[in-house]
Picture 1 (tube, one colour):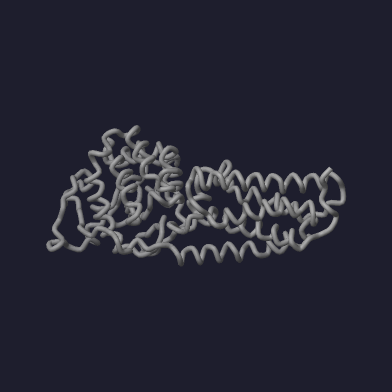
Picture 2 (cartoon, rainbow, N blue to C red):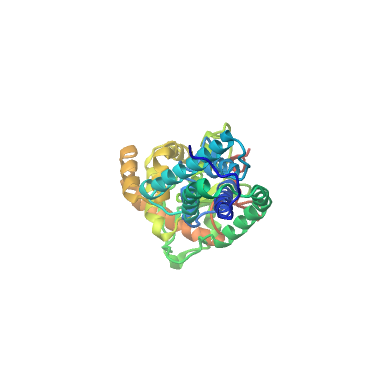
Length: 358
């Protein structure tokens, strides 16, 4: 029967350490609400396959890695180690299949974790377990790694004041009820400061807005944290009875067509802005993966099945997105989700309680 040799191995220690570091990094991406957009890592780990009942898969994998550093003086302990490394290897293969075939993305750290798991499955039965000091070292490194991931990620996020945007502004007509007014194209030559028109450009999806007290929420339909935040807000017990933020939509040039399609679906639904938004985002489960993987064909197919008239609103949606891309130039910060508070301060770690208020 296959067993683990009762000795330690530097090679096994290296592989286990590599797997643990990858888990810590990926867990940091999920738990710290890293602003988007980043590299492909966040799109993979924040997909529906990146967690089990809300618990990130990297956190679930950590105990299996730690077991590989425990002494295996008895037969059952050896069997536990072999079972752990086998589960890690099989899980790595399965997630690689999901990453490449289903999500059609690439996360270098997910791939590194899978390679470490497969290599450990081969090395452990031949060389022995990892050194016992390894879990303690990884625990000591966890907080510095989390901090470094947060700082580096925020430094690398893409600014929404980036080249490639259409700059012909489209502002709703001035009226007492700006939300009900139809968009009108205003010549750039006669354009007043868009900052003064922010209240008219911003969406009021999450509730009525107050010109002075409502914060500004910047989101992206390609940001998994934003989609998760909006989904949680819909399920909040107080949603529908309180005021909300002024919502601005950020979309990079290469993803603007998908953003326009979702925005058109929202505009095609009859009712108040909040009712329109609720109708579309109640179907978030069907739209989540196509948005993250930027599968425009699948997204439009699903939107067409759910909201047959969304194509009638594509031009209006394009105009509104143009207007918001101009308004974003007056909003500080980089990356999404971003909440600009009335006092001028901003934050990335946004939760539903921040968005719903009396």
